[in-house]
Length: 320
Image (tube, one colour):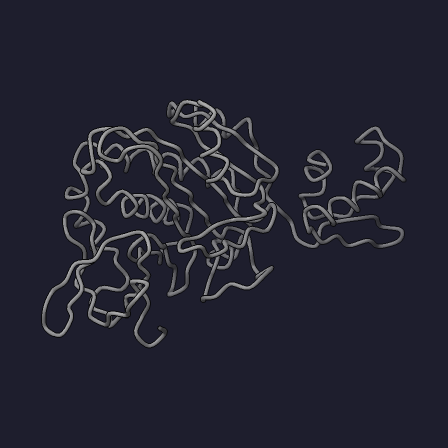
């Protein structure tokens, strides 16, 4: 089916006879493959008698060969998949099976994409980027301090380089563009954070999605919505990987303290009245920034309080 998608990704009409000749199969076999594309991947096709078939919208397929070359230059491995339940879950399984980090898991679609706090990450096929980087980290908790915020900086910088200039970060690990969410990060640990552990960093970026294929609880946007052009996802893989490599190296050398001012400069909710959900309670206050460990600094009733943890959620007070 990948070869069929490669032919159709230009968005033009192709007759059944032409597709059959290119694939070396019969026209009836072409039709069966097209049906599988629609059913398995949820891709919409236009079928016009006398003209043939075309995708409802042009797509950008992942080129495994080019992504492998990019990642190998950085010393990272790659596992690329047509579909998986979750790239984070796949990375965790690979680590459990003894695959050595660092490596990246890429998928064209996710059946059970995950966000923070048990939320679903909507993951339509062949439209967005589902990218997980697995790392081995030693040296204790200080090597993890502010890591998700630094990854947010890397994602934001990659988006700016491909044309989403009005992008910024929101504590703890979301990236927004023009007030709407465009990307999110899910970081999971395995092992002993006080000694040696593995970190899987899941990154979901809305790339070419222009209409929601399912329920998304908040305002969202995509690179295509922001730039009005079809995005080459392979170029985004390249730019994102280099940005991650750069910021992770800086984090290892400088700690979060060396990147704190850069994160603060791109904090879209600085000085905003927000509501912080801690699970059991709601805390209202003004966002003051973050501390040297990446914890949220919140002004509450005239006093500064700091919050950190994986189950916290920050919303604007008017939207909470």
